[in-house]
Length: 488
Image (cartoon, rainbow, N blue to C red; front, side):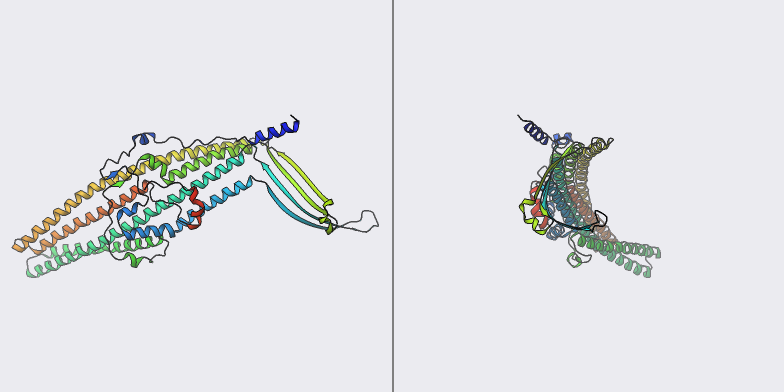
């Protein structure tokens, strides 16, 4: 075998080398939860281990809420921002892939110069030069730094897709939370108005009794105070209602006030389904977007170690030049004036006083940070899910108790009405009993809203609410790399 063949073989072997650690997948995390196969706080009969629904808000059976969430997922600037970041990551990956391929450029040069006299007494010399040529360059990926860089950008792009899904999860939950809060405050405004009317009737009757000498001024002042407090407490409710109107408009990509007419009609708080599909811990780890993003960042950081190590090793670049030219314009068409150069070059920063080693240690530390971030993200996700499940289960129990209390208050109102009819108690007492019933109804209304809010929190903690990219521009380019959504 000739020396040239040996050199070529050695070069090809070097080109097949890829330095740095190979990514072996995310570290095993929360193995006890995965082995258990179910959430620790999912013992309530309201929970089922079936896979959660991606469009979980449809379980609330509120068509207006469905439209609001869909509008937000299409028109929110938050979605547009996340989609733009996906496109940026995809363009960076394409840019890095192109960097590993040869590059070529063309150039044309015209030089005119007037040189000073060569000898004393002689005139200046006019020089003209014309050249048309092309040059090409290619850097051989000897130690796989370029390939590791492609791995890094690909993983970063996947992380941006997961970030887009995470925005969808947060946005759908935010719309549902604001909508439920709006329906709750509208119900409280109606109950406050009803309470005000009862207290006004009590005050009017007590003033009549005061005029007849059967009631004291103290009773009148006490009822007046109650009425004024109720009226004062109703004022902030109107501000909260307006706040939720504005919030829902902005979340759906509109200006504040744009949805006032749509949201003004009062509607009941939507209630969760009888059973909530929650899946299992393994499904949460596999599909929750922030966990996926952290895992992809770990993959990118692992590839970054290889990129840093490759920079510390020798590099070979091939340069090629091809040109035609001479001292007259016609020379650029004369093939006899062709000039060609092929020049390989070797570069190696072997003396950098530890700069490259320090850069490698930096990338290794970043990889370790990404590893710790991933494990922390998994544990935080499991904690969120368990906490949300516990709150939802206990909220159902609280609502059951409050419903029983409301039923008792209704029976007391009916019994006391019979006493009023029989003349054994006063109408003022009846109004007070009815006010207590309204108070019990208000507690039930708030508990129902709280239960639905916890239902929303459960689905958000499970990482549900994302689909394929919703932007038409990014959807076509990003769909192939988008992770599969949870089972429907």
